[in-house]
Amino acid sequence: MDSIYFGEEHELFRSTLRRFIDEEVIPFGDAWEEAGEVPRDVLCKMGALGFLGIRYPSRYGGAEMDTMGTVILSEELGRSTFGGFAVTVLVHTDMASPHLARYGTPEQLDRYMPGITRGELISAVAVTEPDAGSDVAGIRTRAVRDGDDFVLNGSKIFITNGVLADVYFVAAKTNLEVKGSRGVSIFILDRDTPGFTVSRKLDKMGWRSSDTAELSFQDCRVSTSQLLGEENRGFYAIMNNFQNERITLAAQAVGEASKAIELTLDYVTERKAFGGPLFDLQTIRQRLSMLSAKVEAARQFVYYTAWRDAKGDDCVKEVSMAKALCGELVNEVMYTCQQFHGGFGYIREAPIERMARDARVQSIGGGATEVMLEEVAKRMVP
Image (cartoon, rainbow, N blue to C red; front, side, top):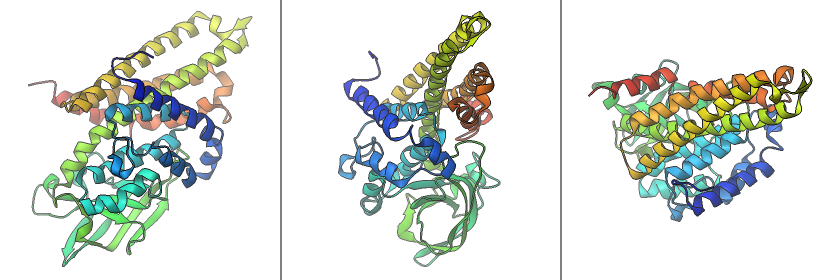
């Protein structure tokens, strides 16, 4: 399609990714939902095709694309209809590993990045705690310096990829004497580090094929060489990457919403009731038309915001708007689409049933709608 935002390279990437999802994901996604995880070999296949390092340097196997590439990846993964699969990939590519890509030392990058882009090392980011989510400054996990090591104690919760990840980027308090936001650091933690355990695998309403964990750190000793970025500057790194995370989730939501409308259009044009296809009913035609308009408007806003981000503009307000808008919109779309599927929409074999459950978290994860609107409000007044 003609676009002011995308070129031939982007469209080739989109078509290749869509074909991969059609052949390697959709036929097997139900089994992954039952198993509660995405098989490692699928992620390795994605890595081999270059899907896991689209914004990283070529020396590490990356494609050196920008935010527009991220938007394509997120949107197409959303269209897969398997939100758990989508977020497994996106946490790895755009929420966890960017911390390493931005702040890693040459030694850290050489050690971890090639495996990350190949899908051989799956990553997770561990920030959220029972009493601190978007309030990063309120985390309680501590890291106390002891000679050439730091000793971590604390816990994390709701960690996507937390059960099966190979490497974790963990936020901890390293200075209790300063304001909370100034005393946070990030550490690279290997899965087999003594003192680190996956406390439990969490059972979720949706995103069933995504493994989600509670993590525990008990006298977990980490070398100072595993400090990621500057000590006590981790808060700012986390807040910076929130922008990437939120534009990613907004694009995923757009992909989910557009696919739901397509599936529903197929259903209502075939399902007969009251003497003809459901699509003959004016209320159904008009509600689907309005939802299509809203989704297309949201898509163009996401593209515009990603384009500005790729240019290096300060667009915190726009990213927050996009996350809030798309997180709410995808739920509006799923509610209506499931309604138009009638009783079939409540049966597990209907993709829309799963998609409706998966979409619910889009207005919660990565910054709840209310948090996003506060970010917008703070920037509305000079």
